[in-house]
Image (cartoon, rainbow, N blue to C red):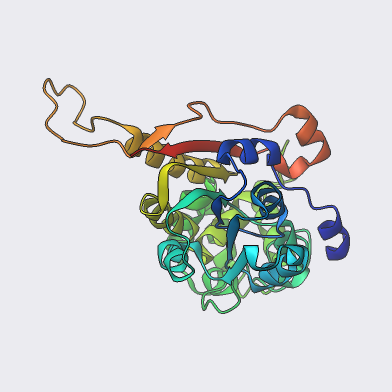
Length: 312
């Protein structure tokens, strides 16, 4: 699939559920922390126009350029910033988005990144091992693959990829270094694990682990979620779409902790923690795409949406 084609057919995941979860309405102020190709942002702007405003953030400068074109009709109603959402609060305050009515995170890798060979995210497109959301970042996937020790590689692949064969994969990588391209790395993993697995390519977990490590995704998510509490107005909504268990676990634990009236250790007879809940869970059960959406957009199949509301 060409990049042009993939952009033209780009469909934002769980769009109706996100718009309903955010309660986007005319005059509202919203932050899209991962504006990507502008799909969710365009739908939010449609609801909040003409008096509402949207702040769109993305670490990928190419995504910002595409979103600028896509959202140009909304003029000053939209502000786009090329930065990492780990700086969410500082960015929001700089552009006077405080307090806001809703914040959206659509995590993971975008169609733009997957379908652009030179970005080095996909094992299906031959390219140098890159995987940086922001090309200004220093660390690349090639740096990790070719310089980390076997023990460091094994730990990284197991932790971020939840790959149970991480030690064998790490050993094979080290034995065959230097490794220059995505296809070369994918073939090495295939040699360790054999042919294609039932549902996913054998290199999927290894590539995901490298991408997460290169972009510090989990650490940045934890820090950004904490900042949302300082930005949301009472009854403002936080919506997060995640695509794998590590992301979803962080989101679930954050929301449940913030929504708890007591965080004392289990078995405590009298509550002494003094914890005051700051969120209310809107979706106690995770929201997943319908079978119809998965059929029309296979990349949505692993998506999970969680929604919470800011308390007074």
